[in-house]
Length: 462
Ligand SMILES: *Cc1c(COP(=O)(O)O)cnc(C)c1O
Image 1 (cartoon, rainbow, N blue to C red):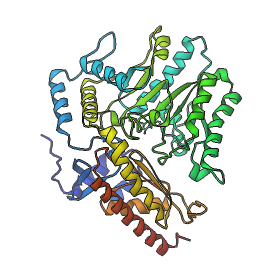
Image 2: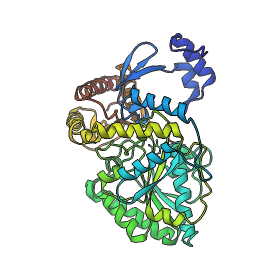
Image 3: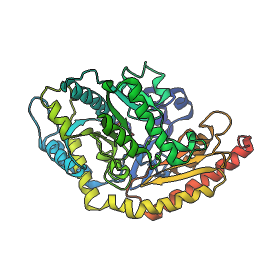
Image 4: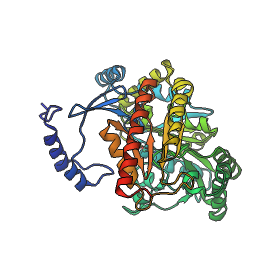
């Protein structure tokens, strides 16, 4: 019998947490001093904490609970699968029905000849797989020196050694000796922060052409692949200029570089299509998937791989795999999640109804004195906070100070909105209703007003 329950006093839970639980991406001392928020249950888009507060989760957990919380169908499928076959592996020429059925479904949903799935337990693991797979592909083709993977600064591709190396997060590289060799980072298509006086379109083209420059500098015969998120998520919801991806595609085609689209956030409806690659009009050889694949109800990720790559690597033994590759319970849950997304028309609804509705409400936040830009694609949104709307200037002092203040006001007003530096971002469950979008924007506006008042008081706004 589990003696630690939802019904214990919050302070006791916090004390046990601080004593025994090491949190990801957190300062452990701060957690001990400040105390964590304990989430006890959730339904739809609403979280409940141990004090009974009801919080609108505008981040869908960590960008993953696309179907919203509390779907009994997923719980039922998991219980059924656990009773029938809780585990078996997919090594050594064995398989099971959930792994087969999910792979077939993903091949049907994925565009073009992306017809094959390699399973992982998470997005990070899937990107580890991708790194090995593209290098194995070139080695099989007699070009083992084609090893370098080009990525972008401020990209997020996970937190394992390979995932964090592929990612372009400086604070992550600073710990643990990263990046590992043969990963090269070019600049990101972040017009608002880095575009200067250029038009968005001009800038998008210029940033894409950095890929061509890098290929020529490093040597075409050394490059295995380019990896990118169709829209950068953790980097601050960076929606690239319309010129960016077509130019990247042209360059990948010209130099025969494999293109990996990291769809961990953009996949499964987030941008109003099944995949962000469709929204951006690109044709990747490999797509990384996780998060929304199971709406976060079970940990599962993978790579959806095109015919060509599988034909080439199929000739050798791929010495790689995870105990939980294609875990039957996670695969069954993912399959049920996709069934519901499809049968309830949720992706179409994001594209045609809730996405455009959020866009209208969210972009109106640009009228707020603190907001330099407010943008939305599908159901991901971002606002840049600035002391000067004209020049898009950052705040004096440490980046993230004002964003953090705003996030704290959101939390205090029962809204989960994340900050990346001085940028506020949202990615709500795809089932969010128009009325809930109204509440989200109302609470966000209140947090902006409170932040504005606070930073004027504190002298941070000049
Ligand atoms: C979250 C994320 C990952 C890593 O996925 P995990 O399941 O946390 O390992 C990889 N790529 C992108 C784009 C992500 O957002």
